[in-house]
Amino acid sequence: MTKKAFNKIADGLTEAIAIARGEAKPAHLSVPSDNPPPLKRRGIVPTTPSMSLVDLANPTRFLGFSQRLLPFTWAVALGLLAVGLYMAFFTAPADYQQGDTVRIMFIHVPSAWLSMGCYGLMAIASLGTLVWRHPLADVTAKSAAPLGAAFTFLTLVTGSLWGKPMWGTWWVWDARLTSELVLLLMYLGLIALWQAMDDQGRAARVAAVLTLVGTINLPIIKFSVDWWNTLHQPASVLRLDGPTIDISMLIPLFVMAGAFTLMFAALLMMSMRNEILRRRVRTMELTAAGLGA
Amino acid sequence: MTAFLALVGLSARLSFGGRSGGALVGLVFFLAVVVVVPFAVGPDMNLLSRIGPAVLWIGALLASLLVLDRLFGDDRSDGALDLLRLSDLPLELVALAKGLGAWLATGLPLAVAAPFLGLLLGLSPNTVLSTTATLVVGTPALTMIGTIGAALMAALGRGGVMIAVLVLPFTIPVLIFGVSAAAAPAMAPAPFLAPFLILIALTLASLVIAPIAAAAALRAGLD
View 1: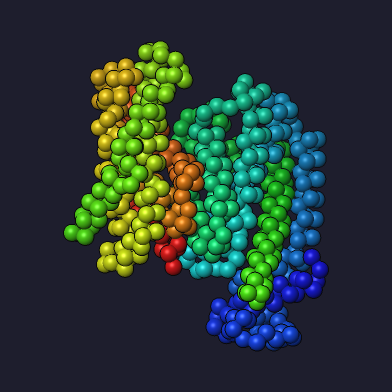
View 2: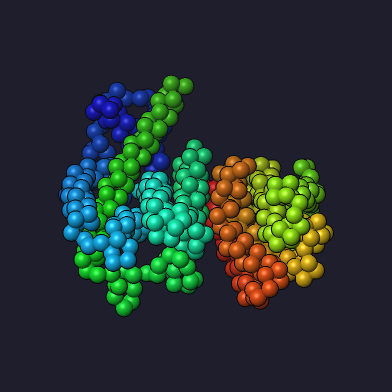
């Protein structure tokens, strides 16, 4: 997108915000001016340099902030990923029972953590949408859903690949596997819900209700291996009496978890940026249609 | 209270009669699902009597999804939902009343029809009894969970197969405990009471949570 086109879109959004606040009349009611005043004079962009979470609520600020943050996030994520993969393949020992297949864990477990963490993030964002009407909350929730679905899918696939040599089967109807599959279904349902809607504001609040209802599944996944005696092994990292995994495997696992989390954060920021720009284009198109009519 | 009961009655009548058949279509669909199964798995009576409770539960689950499309959709399109929202009755109670009415008209008939369909599947008298009992206490949970989906879709002005996609994952716990209690007499040492009590708990919890969620969805969609 050219800079000129982007500025035009930004102006369209600024105008829409001003109209919504009652500060300006819709363009087609007033005489359209050829030289709209720059953003700063209208007071949309705060000129104070301080940054806080509240300031980030402004999509324009978020765009600027995330643009600066993205290269660093990617750099650290890819660096950690390289280190983590090296450790996972070369320095971490093979398991005394499982042999080299235990290395699947370094992909499987971080994906599984993120598949649930992403849903937790969406649940918090949904609260933000419903309670505070935070302008970025629904963008977060919408952008996170496909990422969460991807990590859930990755968890299921790597788990299946791990299950074949260890349990002798690709799939068992075990409590944790089943609840993870249900999580995937919920992600897909939420994506379908977002896709079905034209009115994003309304879709956001409705999807938020569904997301919060689905939060019930999270503790079920986490504790399924403790509540029911299943084929899946019980929790071995996050437990009250300390991890039962040896430190030589725990360190690569945490490095990989860090890499995956940062990768998720970077992808989420990129996806949110796209969503914000997509909405601005939409506003812009609507404004243009209003002017043309 | 009078308004609440009147709304339950209205919802039941609308779901029972209605333009597109209502309860009768639900029952016929239930029968059709049960009849289709022996064609798929073969007319082996031993096998059918073993999977019978599960077949009846899946039939009831699918049949109870049928009514959801119109639960709030019709009220929204003819403006009744706006009137209900303006009434003194809280929207949560409106959702509860609509759900209960829909269950009276569609869920309860399914449970009543289950013993007769159980005969087709060769269920033992004990299994017929347990299946019917689980359906009576379990179908309210199915309908109430469905109420959330119906409210979401009505709020968005959509309907159809999307409701089933959204609702089905949430009905899995009800299905698990419903079937395990229903099939308990057929699987000799399996306990009946524990899953049955959990099923009751799920129904009671859904009676509280679903109206709140459905009302939140309706509010989100109507303003």
